[in-house]
Image 1 (cartoon, rainbow, N blue to C red):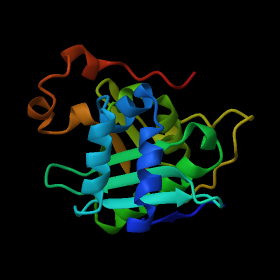
Image 2 (image 1 turned 30 degrees about the vertical axis):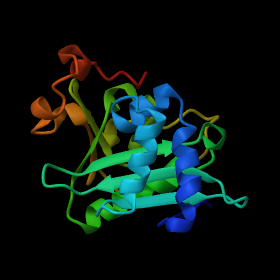
Image 3 (image 1 turned 180 degrees about the vertical axis):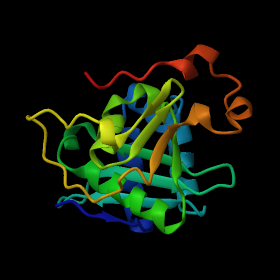
Length: 196
């Protein structure tokens, strides 16, 4: 079983190594745009000085296999989640997203905004398997209507979010028009089609 912990300054280099190891596609999904290496290092430095909640999964060899950030701002909490390519389907994302759901409920938050959620079918499926709702510009997928993961995937422990937490695409944030002025309008309207 994987455990998510709060990183310390001792984890800084490994946290940066994890974020720098993300492909450009993963960076787009994680940050909402493709950040340069310099931007990623600056982002990691800010994580230790802001009020954002940060959790990591540290492996036995001390490598960081996944990072969760939950920035609780006045315009709505923003969730960032990344898992190293070598650690996917090992329960890392599950442990981190469960932690995000528990934190959301503890803070009385019902909706977590995620950059480019409409393009991130893996995160959509994971949220649905944990009992969360997923909301993209094209509509809402309810956890109650979700199809369970294919038989080849790892069994997910259900912790009973039962629709009490919703992951919503960043494009649906009330101030999204101002925050994403450089995002093409049609990008926010991509339909969600992860269930078949």
